[in-house]
Image (cartoon, rainbow, N blue to C red):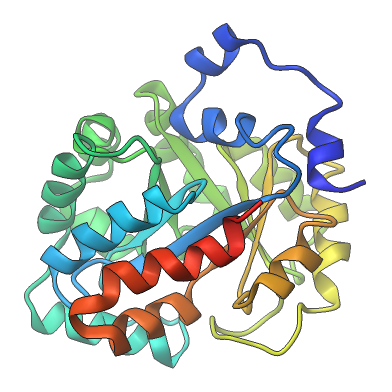
Length: 279
C-alpha cells in the first residue's frame, strides 16, 4: 500500500487538522495528494544566515512538507562530509542557536511550513531544554530532533515540548531492537525519522535494502508518519521510498547544491525540491 492509499484509509476532519500540531497538520494535508512528503534538510548559517532565510522561503514555496534546520555543531558525528563542511562554514560565520531562533522567529511571518530544529544535544543544553520547550513555538519551531539524546532519557524533554504545542521527532535505525522501537514510539510525536542504513549521512546510488524492513517494523508500534532519510538524493529514490514510507528526508544533496550555488542558492534550491514535489 503506497502512502496516499494508506493515508486515505482514515479521514481527518478540518477541526482535527486545525487542532493538531503544525507537523501533524502538514502530514494530514498529504492525504489524497498521490505521493509522499518531502522533508528537506539544510544547515543554518551556510553559506550565511541571510541566504538560509531565502532558502527556507524557497523550499516552503516549492512544496516542502516539513523543513529540518540544522544547528551548526563542532562535532557532527552522525553527518557525512558535506554537512560537516557546511557546519564548519556556519561556525566560522559565528552562527549560534540564538541566531537560528531569531531567524525562524522572523521566518514564521512569511511561511507556515513547519520547521524542525535538528541539533546535537550540547547546543540545546547550553540554551536550556526547558527554556527551549517553552519558547519553541514563539520562535517559529514546530518540532525538535536531537540526534544524540538517548531514547530512555528523552521523555522529560519530549513531554515539555508537547505541553507547549511542539513535537519531539525521534530517530530509529536498522540496528534498533524491537524494545527500542517501542520506547521510541512511546516518546515521539509528529513523525518518526527512519535512518535507512547504518553510518553517516550522504548521497547513495540506491535506497538501502534495510529501509523497508525497518519501516515495517516500526509500524508495529506506532501510527505516526515515517520519514526515510540518509542517502535519499533523487526523485527516483523518493518514488521508491514512498512505496512504504510517508516521506523522504533530503539532506546532503541539497546542502551540496547550496554550497555550490552562490547567490543563486535559493532559486536553485526551490528548483531542486520541485523535482520531488511535482504532481
